[in-house]
Image (cartoon, rainbow, N blue to C red; front, side, top):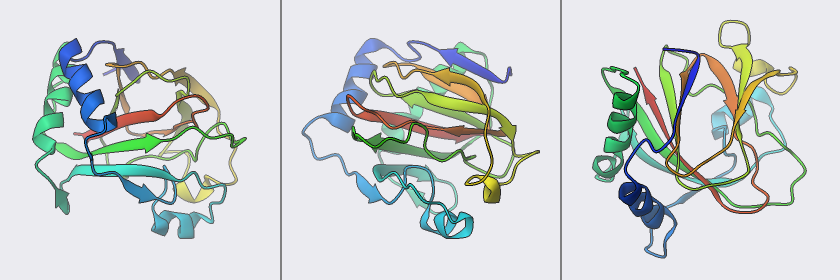
Length: 194
């Protein structure tokens, strides 16, 4: 696989609309508050990170401890998108959704991070259009550690705008970050596969 691949209309339009309605409609989808869109409480403590960006998340699946029946609703996204680029993978390691609400906060990029410290491929599915891009950086797990994220100057490799139905695949070795939305809710589903 290339360093990153963008797949537009990764799934059919009707499925795109249904996912958007379930996650963002007035139907009681279970979102859970997190102190930071990127870092868990443990990582906040380890890195000494500040300028936290509160958000909401939902864990569909984590092969180590969490699963719920909604995984069967979102699982076809990764299968259809991977099929479009002839990407064969063995398993889903985790699948999570993230929701950021618009803010006037001055920070552009949230904390650079990697999802997992094992070899994997990350896939971000964009639930709706937004002007807050995902940034992939030149820095990788091989030349930067998570403990450096608050001190290091990261250099952007590429910025990808959220577009409804778009999937961004990239090698999990790359540090990446979301950006804080200014105009509308930013909602993604993040898969990590190997």
